[in-house]
Length: 189
Image 1: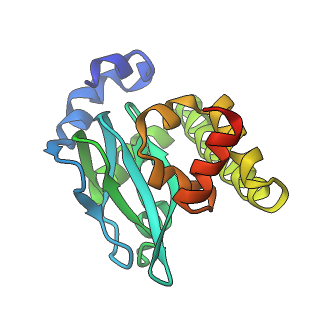
Image 2: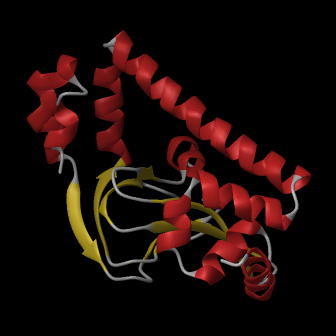
């Protein structure tokens, strides 16, 4: 799993084996909760195979906030970095293989990376990219109709439409499954 990333971190080749040893591989069935809303996050998850859903409870309703797929990292960043309760739950929605790393071990890796300006800049850029995605999603909720949000999802992230159950897509778009079905019927999809 990690060999494909090795070339991306040439400055840390001498520490590669040490860093990889911090990760723990687990296979989880669909429905497995990796972090519950309100818990303190001590782990980050790198997905080898599968899909994780990030969601929170809003007055008894699940609201999906994000999906993560192969080669992506999922965590409750605020909880992980600031030692505060997580705002959301992380759950596998497909049988998944994930590699988790404990916060203390990731902190060691981040300390090593901080010594390499090029890698530090890449991590900062990735963080800004994720913030940009969240900002676009928030603006879309304010500005776009549910149908426009669905069409954007269809064109920008078709893999979500192909892999994620419709009821989760509906909560991600901020609508009911019935409304999503109506939109899909109207569009002939």
